Length: 390
Image (cartoon, rainbow, N blue to C red; front, side, top):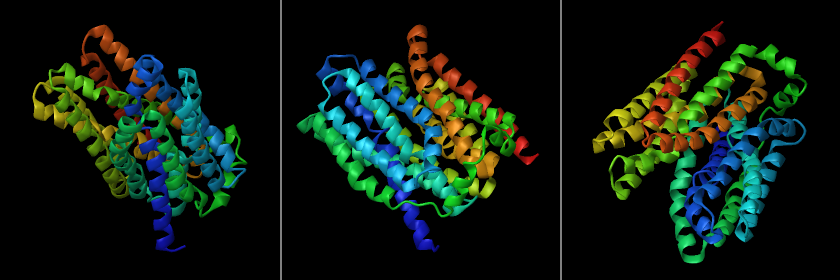
């Protein structure tokens, strides 16, 4: 192994995250209105596709772990890319919202094959315990990829229709991600194969059940905060700002989202995952507080949204590194369970904030809920730190 090989592995991981998270998750919002208008359904009906995608990714995680114990990781990841491309082609010819739901579930499974769990597993294998900076770079690439592709896909939708845009998404996955997954490999494949011999009881032998529960609860708190993300623009509008300013708020948040992810890994490598998570939770809590109490001031609304974006680093890079710290050699099995809880919480809380706002007439209670989750997450991180030191 040399530095060039490790750099190429990192580049492949960046492109996989770009396709699985940046393209699949971060670009889907621009399709809501054209699909709703074409099928004559509500945007909420279309948005349910995203929820199904998130849930299928979450519950597929343990299946992925079993698959990589039987097949090469390159085969499993490549299957995911092919399934994702086929699903987008299915969406491009779908005439019913229910076909979109089926395709959404398939896309979630596809993303689970080459997104956060496999990429974090590969980087841990190639870079060892100090893989935080590399994981941060890879995860931060999702925002970069989304920033590049959203305008392109938007123009294609305007000029040729969303059906052609879905075909373009399929082509991008095949052109960008498939060459990466076909050449992906683990440096120590025996480490994954070895963990296949562990039973459920073996999981608790490698990690205390109480620690596993705390990791799962932390994942719920971290990702539950992120559910507010899709409401940020609406929050700005409800505060009396123009659509243009509200769009700027969302753009600033997306930019700082990637920047925070890039930096988080370096901080974790220097200070440890516990201290880095505490620091980022406090930053996110500060941002939420600014939006809750001072959003009438434009600069503080922008600043609050920017700081709130630190939460995304904790739910992606941070949760992975905390799981690595607690699970050690049993990381894949443990993180797959934590992923189920975290991703499910994101899917549920995104909808919950909408219903809560409808009931109360404003976003204040939703923001208080985000702050409560942040404080709960802080306590859990401290407890996890004490457990892993013992």
